[in-house]
Amino acid sequence: MAEPMQLFIKKFWTEYKTGKKGETREIDMVEYSPIGSIQKTSIPKSIKEISSVIPLEGRGAHNPAVLMAHMRWDAIRPSYEAWKKGHEIPLDGTPLAAWPGLTNEQAQLLKMKGVKTVEQIAALTDTHKQSMGVPGLHDMITNAQRFLKAQEKSVVVDALSKKDEEIAELRAQMAELVDMVKEKRKPGRPKSEAA
Image 1: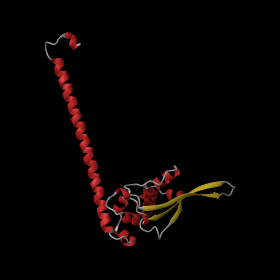
Image 2: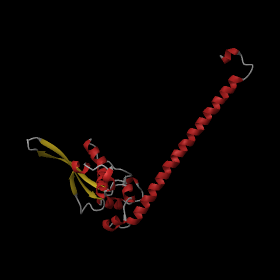
Image 3: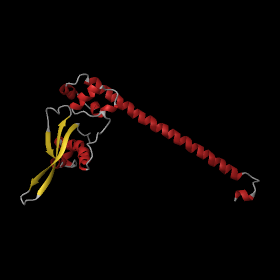
């Protein structure tokens, strides 16, 4: 399946509606915007509407509208689940403040446009470059992509280093075991030691 959409989630809230029989129903709502147009576009929807997606099996697998609905729900679901548990809306990625590739002013400008993580910068497209009006955005995107690739390489190098340490430790243990077995097999050892 495709990656989730890049969305800026403005807020979640609960509305209360009275049904025909006088019962009160809770309706969870979300307000979101596409990244880069949070000042222009604000979309309020009920969670029930957004989460009610047609299964991807059968006809849904080839329907672009169904695929888009799944990508939208995949982008909103983690934040919604965190909100329901009473947590802050989580950042999915590296916060802008943790990346030395931006000035404070650039980070603030990007946040105003709905971009909160380095991963979101790296995923911006030519359409975003044109619509967001952020000076130097092309270079920021390129640098964010390089930063993320370097992080991936660093994770691989760390994992390989850890494996090398584990292998060295296992080799030492094997050598110790081999020495113990050789010691037990030496002829002429007193029987009391061998028992």
